[in-house]
Structures are given as structure tokens and as C-alpha cells.
Image 1: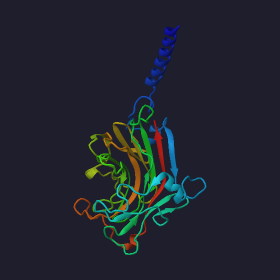
Image 2 (image 1 turned 45 degrees about the horizontal axis):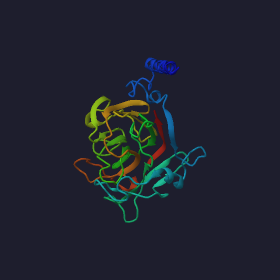
Image 3 (image 1 turned 90 degrees about the horizontal axis):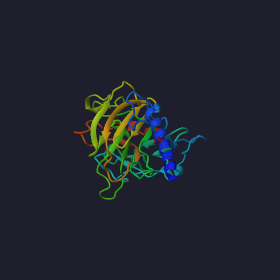
Length: 305
């Protein structure tokens, strides 16, 4: 009797495996998508686990500072300290640098009293998820694949440096080895502006290129003014690769492993200005008239497989 039951279970398992093998749709047949597939097709079959919609309208999930603080932190790795020769000083949650509109959250850079166009002279806002992410890392039930969509409108103007990125923001020694995923990162500086998308990976886990539309200096220039409207910046993250999409179309894909001992947080921030004239030439605002400057975030969505 036990042998017959075992054979029945084996037949059921083999039938299920055969169905999966015959499937031509992502994600049953592979953790890695067809490079011709659009993001909305890639995420079919994945489960939406988070939909952070920002704004004060009745159908938005997060429309006040107290709601924002339940799910996000206002600091990354440095609190209000100025690091990496940047000019902004990120602020705790407040109604000047975190401004809700009907349908969005505006991360707003301002010039405070006694501030100015200098290192630490600009106040700005950023948000970091309290939830962490790492494909296939947290045991048997861990998601093997994550997909993210950050829909936002970036600012124009010299010195603006908006980004959405993944990083281990733990201050515990040994938890961060520099692993990082960016999508997007805009540099309004010499030879680059809001028309030029970039999205890099950093850290020991960087691998070979799978696909890319990027040209010289790692820039994709589709002749689109990304500051003129909202755009969707989408990332598919498997244990061995990262795929980056803009408005549904694949722009760049690389083999990549997250090697930091700590898992990743997702951050969205408006950096402004840098004194690194050799590495980031011209990344400085030129006038106080550029402020307040706004990075407007409409929503953040997260799927898992």
C-alpha cells in the first residue's frame, strides 16, 4: 500500500514537472527573462506584495508624514551628515522636504537659512524602505526573484542628482561590502543631463554584460526629456542577474550577485551638487533660483516569485 501511494505521488510530481517544462511563459521555465520581453510580460505570474502609492487623494495609500514613517526611513547610511563631497544634507521627515500632492510625494531640495550653494548648504529628502530584499537568501520560502517599479518625475537643472537604488544601509561593521544596484541615476552635469539615463551596479558581485542599450560612458540617450513627465523605472533582480527597464522596455542587463552580508534596502533620493570636480565635473547648481527642486514619486511597486 505504501509503495502504491509513493508511486501515485511520483506520477503527480512528474506530471507537474512536465507541465512546467512545456510552458513557454516566464517565469515557470526560467528565472531569467527573454531580453525581448517587456516588463509587464515578465512580471506576469509574479505576486504583487507591495504597492506604495503616494498622495492625499482617497485612493492613495500614503498621504501623510505619519503614514510615511511607518514604512520608510528618512536616512540612508549617514543621517544628516554630508558625505562623498555632496552638497545636500538629508533631513528628518518634515513638511518642507517631504511634500504630498494629490497623487505623489515630492522629495524637495531647499535652501535653509544660512544655507547656500556649498557642501551641506542644501536640505533635501530621501526615503528608504524598512523592508529588505535579497533574492533567494532567506530560507526555503524566500522569493527567488524580485521585481520593482519606481514611477517618478526627475528634476532638470545643473547639479540635480536624483536616483533610485539598492544598498545595505546597516551601520554594523562587516554588513556592507559596497554592493549596489542603481535604476535610475541622473547626473545633471558636464556632458550629461535629464536626457541621459544611467543605471550601474557596484561591488564584488559585478559580472558580464547580458544586454545593453547604453553607449559611451554607460549612458543611454533615447532623446527623451525625463524631467518633462513621470516615467517607470523597473528592475528585475534574480540571484545571478539584474535586468533594468524604462517604461517597460529593457535597457540594460548584467550578471550580478549581491555579496554584501546584509540584505538591500530600496532608496529614492534627491542629491544635489558635488565638489568632486574630476569625477563629476559640473555637478553643481548654478543659481538659487533652481530651488525648491523636486523629485516627484508617484508609486513604488514590488513583486515576488
